[in-house]
Image 1 (cartoon, helix red, strand yellow):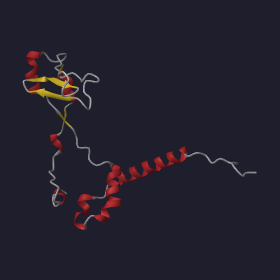
Image 2 (tube, helix red, strand yellow):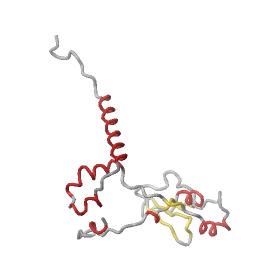
Image 3 (spheres, helix red, strand yellow):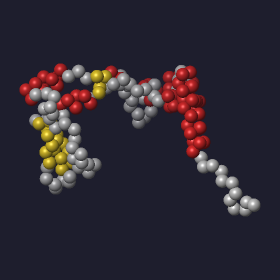
Image 4 (cartoon, helix red, strand yellow):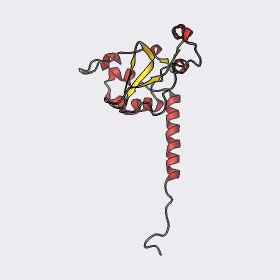
Amino acid sequence: MVQTLNMQHHVTFTEVQSDVFFDYGELLDRFYKAFPGGSIQGNHIFWADASKPSVLYTKETDEAPVITLPFRNDKFVQQQNRLRELKEFALKSIPAPGIKPIKQVELYTKWRKFVPDSFQDEICPKPSTDVINQVTSDRKQKNRERASKKRPRVRGGRGAS
Protein backbone atom coordinates (compact mmCIF):
# COMPACT_ATOMS: atom_id res chain seq x y z
CA MET A 1 0.00 0.00 0.00
CA VAL A 2 2.92 2.37 0.72
CA GLN A 3 4.10 2.10 -2.90
CA THR A 4 0.58 2.72 -4.18
CA LEU A 5 0.12 5.84 -2.06
CA ASN A 6 3.55 7.20 -3.02
CA MET A 7 2.64 7.05 -6.73
CA GLN A 8 0.62 10.22 -6.23
CA HIS A 9 2.35 13.58 -6.94
CA HIS A 10 1.38 15.31 -3.71
CA VAL A 11 1.61 12.34 -1.37
CA THR A 12 4.61 11.11 0.57
CA PHE A 13 3.55 8.21 2.72
CA THR A 14 5.96 6.75 5.24
CA GLU A 15 5.05 3.49 6.87
CA VAL A 16 5.50 3.55 10.63
CA GLN A 17 5.64 0.40 12.70
CA SER A 18 3.30 0.24 15.69
CA ASP A 19 6.18 -0.40 18.09
CA VAL A 20 7.13 3.30 18.05
CA PHE A 21 3.95 4.43 19.82
CA PHE A 22 3.94 4.56 23.60
CA ASP A 23 1.49 5.40 26.37
CA TYR A 24 2.87 8.53 28.02
CA GLY A 25 -0.09 8.95 30.38
CA GLU A 26 1.44 7.10 33.33
CA LEU A 27 4.78 8.93 32.94
CA LEU A 28 3.09 12.33 32.79
CA ASP A 29 0.90 11.52 35.81
CA ARG A 30 3.91 10.42 37.83
CA PHE A 31 6.28 13.29 37.05
CA TYR A 32 3.98 16.22 36.23
CA LYS A 33 0.86 17.86 37.65
CA ALA A 34 -2.31 18.17 35.59
CA PHE A 35 -3.17 21.47 33.93
CA PRO A 36 -5.27 23.61 36.26
CA GLY A 37 -8.77 24.10 34.90
CA GLY A 38 -9.01 27.11 32.60
CA SER A 39 -5.24 27.67 32.49
CA ILE A 40 -4.99 26.98 28.74
CA GLN A 41 -7.57 28.37 26.34
CA GLY A 42 -7.60 28.22 22.56
CA ASN A 43 -6.50 31.84 22.31
CA HIS A 44 -3.72 31.64 24.92
CA ILE A 45 -0.04 31.83 24.09
CA PHE A 46 2.02 29.23 25.90
CA TRP A 47 5.57 27.90 25.79
CA ALA A 48 8.23 26.02 27.76
CA ASP A 49 11.94 26.62 28.24
CA ALA A 50 14.48 23.78 28.10
CA SER A 51 16.28 25.21 31.15
CA LYS A 52 13.09 24.70 33.23
CA PRO A 53 11.30 21.76 31.59
CA SER A 54 8.64 21.40 34.30
CA VAL A 55 7.44 25.01 34.03
CA LEU A 56 4.91 26.26 31.49
CA TYR A 57 4.59 29.94 30.64
CA THR A 58 1.33 31.35 29.34
CA LYS A 59 -0.29 34.65 28.39
CA GLU A 60 -3.87 35.43 27.46
CA THR A 61 -2.72 37.88 24.77
CA ASP A 62 0.58 39.12 23.44
CA GLU A 63 0.42 42.21 25.68
CA ALA A 64 -0.82 40.38 28.82
CA PRO A 65 1.52 39.54 31.71
CA VAL A 66 3.25 36.16 31.71
CA ILE A 67 1.75 33.55 34.03
CA THR A 68 4.12 30.85 35.29
CA LEU A 69 2.64 27.40 35.90
CA PRO A 70 4.90 24.93 37.73
CA PHE A 71 4.13 21.36 36.69
CA ARG A 72 6.76 19.31 38.52
CA ASN A 73 5.01 16.72 40.65
CA ASP A 74 6.99 15.86 43.80
CA LYS A 75 4.23 13.65 45.17
CA PHE A 76 5.66 10.40 43.73
CA VAL A 77 9.29 11.28 42.97
CA GLN A 78 11.79 13.20 45.09
CA GLN A 79 13.69 15.96 43.30
CA GLN A 80 17.12 14.34 43.78
CA ASN A 81 15.89 11.10 42.10
CA ARG A 82 13.87 12.74 39.34
CA LEU A 83 16.35 12.59 36.44
CA ARG A 84 17.37 9.01 37.16
CA GLU A 85 13.75 7.85 37.46
CA LEU A 86 12.76 9.66 34.26
CA LYS A 87 15.57 7.90 32.38
CA GLU A 88 14.65 4.50 33.85
CA PHE A 89 10.89 4.82 33.40
CA ALA A 90 9.62 1.98 31.19
CA LEU A 91 7.03 3.16 28.68
CA LYS A 92 4.33 0.71 27.63
CA SER A 93 3.69 0.20 23.93
CA ILE A 94 0.31 1.11 22.50
CA PRO A 95 -1.03 -1.62 20.23
CA ALA A 96 -2.02 -0.51 16.74
CA PRO A 97 -5.80 -0.09 16.66
CA GLY A 98 -6.14 -1.11 13.02
CA ILE A 99 -9.18 -0.23 10.94
CA LYS A 100 -12.59 -0.35 12.62
CA PRO A 101 -14.63 -3.40 11.60
CA ILE A 102 -17.33 -1.34 9.89
CA LYS A 103 -14.67 0.39 7.74
CA GLN A 104 -13.08 -2.96 6.84
CA VAL A 105 -16.45 -4.17 5.54
CA GLU A 106 -17.15 -0.90 3.70
CA LEU A 107 -13.74 -0.95 2.02
CA TYR A 108 -14.42 -4.48 0.80
CA THR A 109 -18.07 -4.11 -0.20
CA LYS A 110 -18.23 -0.52 -1.47
CA TRP A 111 -14.76 0.55 -2.60
CA ARG A 112 -12.93 -2.58 -3.77
CA LYS A 113 -14.54 -2.34 -7.24
CA PHE A 114 -12.86 1.06 -7.81
CA VAL A 115 -9.36 -0.20 -6.96
CA PRO A 116 -7.22 -1.76 -9.73
CA ASP A 117 -7.31 -5.56 -9.56
CA SER A 118 -3.61 -5.84 -8.74
CA PHE A 119 -4.10 -3.78 -5.54
CA GLN A 120 -7.53 -4.98 -4.35
CA ASP A 121 -6.25 -7.63 -1.94
CA GLU A 122 -3.80 -5.18 -0.39
CA ILE A 123 -6.02 -2.08 -0.11
CA CYS A 124 -9.48 -3.63 0.30
CA PRO A 125 -8.95 -7.17 1.59
CA LYS A 126 -11.90 -9.34 2.51
CA PRO A 127 -12.53 -9.11 6.29
CA SER A 128 -12.84 -12.30 8.30
CA THR A 129 -16.25 -13.95 8.53
CA ASP A 130 -16.40 -12.98 12.22
CA VAL A 131 -15.91 -9.29 11.37
CA ILE A 132 -18.56 -9.40 8.61
CA ASN A 133 -21.04 -11.18 10.91
CA GLN A 134 -20.41 -8.71 13.75
CA VAL A 135 -20.94 -5.67 11.48
CA THR A 136 -24.12 -7.21 10.03
CA SER A 137 -25.41 -7.94 13.52
CA ASP A 138 -24.59 -4.40 14.72
CA ARG A 139 -26.38 -2.87 11.72
CA LYS A 140 -29.49 -4.99 12.29
CA GLN A 141 -29.53 -3.97 15.96
CA LYS A 142 -29.23 -0.26 15.06
CA ASN A 143 -32.05 -0.60 12.51
CA ARG A 144 -34.27 -2.23 15.16
CA GLU A 145 -33.50 0.59 17.61
CA ARG A 146 -34.30 3.23 14.98
CA ALA A 147 -37.55 1.51 14.07
CA SER A 148 -38.63 1.37 17.70
CA LYS A 149 -37.97 5.12 18.12
CA LYS A 150 -40.18 6.15 15.19
CA ARG A 151 -43.35 7.92 16.17
CA PRO A 152 -46.41 5.69 16.23
CA ARG A 153 -48.99 6.31 13.54
CA VAL A 154 -51.78 8.53 14.76
CA ARG A 155 -55.23 7.31 13.88
CA GLY A 156 -57.98 9.76 13.29
CA GLY A 157 -56.52 13.12 12.36
CA ARG A 158 -58.07 15.54 9.91
CA GLY A 159 -60.86 14.23 7.77
CA ALA A 160 -61.34 11.08 9.85
CA SER A 161 -64.89 10.15 10.52
